[in-house]
Amino acid sequence: MDGYESLESIGSGSFGLIRKVRRKADGKILARKEIDYRKMTTKEKEQLVAEVNILKDLKHPNIVQFLERVIDREHCFIYILMEYCEGGDLAAVIKRHKESSTPIPEEFVWNIMVQLIMALHECHHGTTTNEETHQVTPRPILHRDLKPDNVFLDGKHNVKLGDFGLSRSLTNPQKAFAQTYVGTPFYMSPELIGEFTYDAKSDIWSLGCVIYELCALQPPFLADTQAQLSARIKEGRVQSLPGNYTQELNQIVKWMLQVNVSL
Ligand SMILES: CNC(=O)c1c(C)[nH]c(/C=C2\C(=O)Nc3ccc(Cl)cc32)c1C
Image 1 (cartoon, helix red, strand yellow):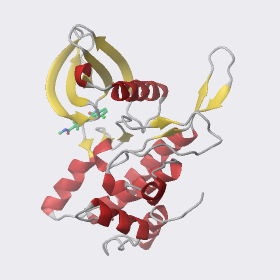
Image 2 (tube, protein in one colour):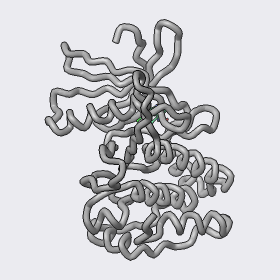
Image 3 (cartoon, helix red, strand yellow):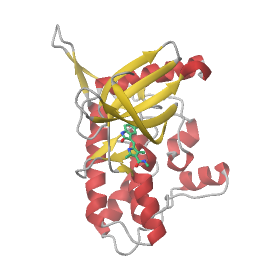
């Protein structure tokens, strides 16, 4: 990694820490995920390969841009260079507003929601084009771990969906078929609890949880145990947003958190 100057650590992602770095050639600031693969299981290494293959195929203004992957075999490290998001993650935004007891402005919530819908549309309905044949193929990708910690902000209020460490590419786009579920329990969708399967609707459910949390400054479903949380999620009873948010926003969140919706 001689071409980069290491700066401070800025967080942790799937498999490793995230560090701010400066590219020596042009001074550009980037984010670098640093992964020590000595301790990784075979399955984790496969998951990491899948993450890189998914990330490098995704080019969209609302998805963190992958730049390059570097393998340091001498020290058993893999480095993933990605765009820097100076605004940090949404979890920190929620924490700041919760600590100061100030609601997040509705305008900001709509802005986040629209941009995350664009990012998820690119994941779920994106395509790849073969350079030789120019054949266009659907390339459905499930994020599977959408949560405030995985949503980042650049310096211009642009929203960037990040950390595809648990994402999956659906090889057969006709079948929105199941994938084994992993991810953050608070944002687990009802279909996961039942059959532990995952499809595009589940990312929409997680989006509903993120938007709800931006407004209520806490997740829509809370419990002390996984069993209690699962029961509450399957029941699907969601409190309305705080009174300062409009009925329109309330309704959209309720639609995204509706149990047994078949798209
Ligand atoms: C306290 N840390 C931060 O404010 C922060 C900042 C300024 N940037 C980040 C994170 C990322 C960042 O800046 N670019 C990223 C690309 C991919 C992933 Cl998974 C994360 C990032 C974070 C967590």
